[in-house]
Image 1 (tube, helix red, strand yellow):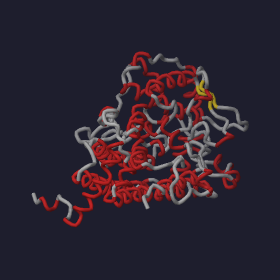
Image 2 (cartoon, rainbow, N blue to C red):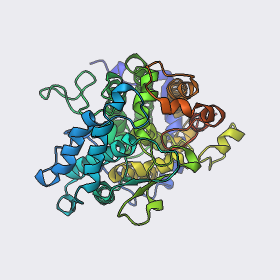
Image 3 (spheres, one colour):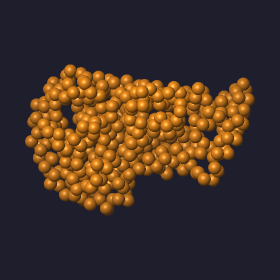
Image 4 (cartoon, rainbow, N blue to C red):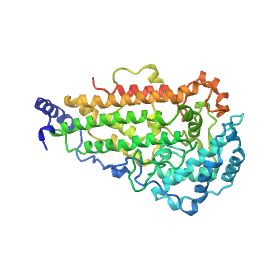
Length: 470
């Protein structure tokens, strides 16, 4: 091994040394030694290789919960979207109503026997959340805007297991991606070319491709989580070797973020925008999908329904992206004075969106983000006081900003453009959607959780750009 390939170039040595000297006093003095101990990622159910995806997918529930498991198995073939007026969907109207009737008449199964078993709690949340969305969105729409009543056979146990897991009692990113992925070949490790998703709302290859892109990004991001852990456990920042190591780590993170951008864009090859918007996305909609005027959902048998988080799944619930934001100190709340000043559109966006999305993550992952935010050596402040780190830090931030630029383009193509389109190319797929086009064209385009998509994503992108150290 040639050590000259590992050490910084001679011209950089003095620069690194001065940077370490200038930053060590201020940062170590404020670090309050002994008050904070960085816990390993494993303490937060983060796998070294698969990140936030469990190494083993949650197994099927035992026999006492077979009513749930059987209902989920039947849903894929018995149900169709309630707003779908195609011949195929109409042919399932009778079987759909029978299925919903069985749910309404089903037992309220006690979950106390699994309340300390994380794997079974995850599976229970997964099954019940899918059943709730199957029930709600297979119901044909009505003229009046009365709230949707979710039967107590689903609502009561879902709220119970959600409280154990510290996660919202509704379909989440964890349910569609993290707890839904398994290996195609059990003899091989989970990888982009060795994953399958047993449960799909639409049954289309497009939906499978959509999940594959998300899970691949999570797998690739596992290295970022290892790098963050490594940097936060460095003994101090008072020497050249430490500064050099952080610099190389930031450069590596920049490269991985660029890969994540490519993975995100790869969804266009396998998931058609029309199929996504008209056949897949409607299943995700939460109780507030129509914004402030949404009729909402009522969870039968559950008190304080208004306090429940029921917005549905979103890419904003990926703990990986939140970890990057925390580590790089991205100010989505606009609570810090940074340049350039936020635009009027930025100020009008939902500044609490990212914080609210954390409630849709498993509680242990929320704990990880809180623990990460408590680090006594904030990376941005370290880079601000250490000239040798400013460029690699800024490169990582700009790579994240570019990723969000790409996300905005995907959202424009898959959501905004499709919502403005005059027709769906799949013959007679969504007559109900056609009837709402006039209102959609004149109002804001909302995500499945009721947020204004374009304004929100632009605000996130601009907040990322403002983290750059000028």
